[in-house]
Length: 269
Image (cartoon, rainbow, N blue to C red; front, side, top):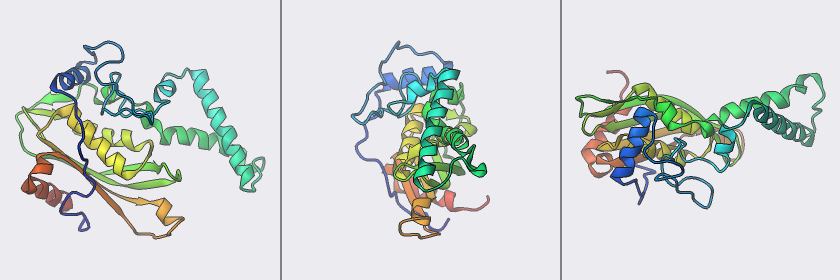
């Protein structure tokens, strides 16, 4: 862990967070499963690229891609058709690289890969509201909470090859609002199971934590190895990319940030 930086590396700049009234509506939704705002409301703000510019939309989707809702609402028949369409595309790829998709070893590969890709990208259709499942609590705790060494697996959106590593997430509760520890890991899993770049993944996790808990601060550090740098291109096995995103007291107070970075470097208690 000695290669973790002593200061933020890929922090977010000039991010517009929701107003307190919107945040409270969101927290109510996450805690109770009900929203006070019907339809496409206070959280919906689409960017030209089709991604939401706010951390969490009215229906719990977070930074949804343009086709995320359609995918989530697929019927069983529509899901089967989607997999079949991907399978056809994979068969074409096999032909284009000079393979025989009809030979024994590859006969079922297109369908296998289609199903695998749906799993690798399942984060698109997952809802933060469902993921949190009423897991926000009131506790008499006002010190740092850290979940570190969370294994994450994602696909680079540039080459669609994996990047894998660990993410460390910390926050300081405000007014006793805490979240179930396993939900922190699930949040990282949700954002990683998409086509991603590491910088955005790190920032999305931090933004979602900030929005859900309204804590005094959030800190996220991620270390990963990118197969697009290992298997192709510069071909540098062993290289690691480290990104960070910090909000609130972790960004504004050097001692708080240093405490977090020191704790995630430590092995054992």
